[in-house]
Image 1 (tube, rainbow, N blue to C red):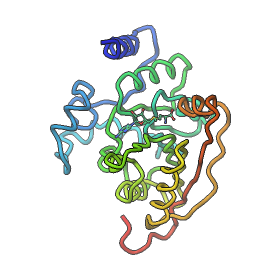
Image 2: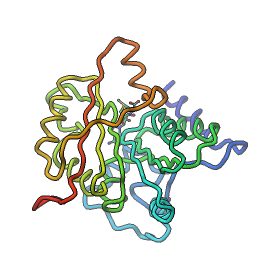
Image 3: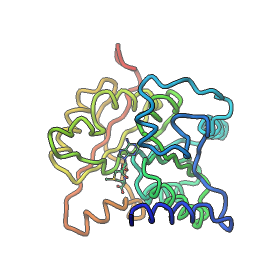
Image 4: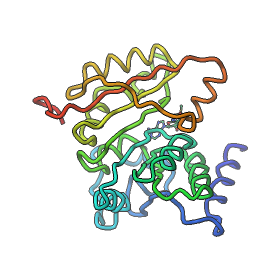
Length: 250
Ligand SMILES: C[S@@+](CC[C@H](N)C(=O)[O-])C[C@H]1O[C@@H](n2cnc3c(N)ncnc32)[C@H](O)[C@@H]1O
């Protein structure tokens, strides 16, 4: 199938020894970060709560956050990063920050990895993983300065609505990983979903609305460029984690 051929090609290019080291973080003994197991099988095999990490000291994500903390580098999350244009631009424009891009599709991660390595970017890490698991199990509490959820899948049919990223349980996970004062930025071309995002975040404890961070042209995402070229309108909003968590918040 052409789709599989594309994935094989992207993964082969990712292993090209002439490129700088891969920016993808993985761990063979981790149910979340094991690249040898396809995402579908990882999801079928495990249900929450996941087994505890057998070798937490070897976790590459732990090292990523420890290095960022040691250097005082703010960490940004790109949740559902796709082909990674935004993550790469963000990392290149802000070498003092660390950017962590989470994306489930192997070919997208591989292409993003190769492009970042060719561009000489080093302050970016890529995860081929299920974003909810990463938020729940892998990211230390209060460790993230800014989270970007840019053009999340809208799942327009009612029967698929439960798959949308913006729901109260995921808002609670964002609240847990954000540092006090940290900001969630959202953008979508889908007006009904935007309405639901606003409603969800208005009901999410511990957040207040704030101005979305303005993104330069270079920081436009791959999907965003496509939507703009089709004349579609982009809706954006942002919320700040309040400094004092309300009772009952995670
Ligand atoms: C519509 S695309 C937007 C990609 C990128 N943010 C952009 O604007 O170009 C949504 C992305 O989220 C990824 N995604 C959806 N659900 C995910 C999940 N549960 N875990 C990780 N990535 C996910 C999809 O594979 C897809 O690449």
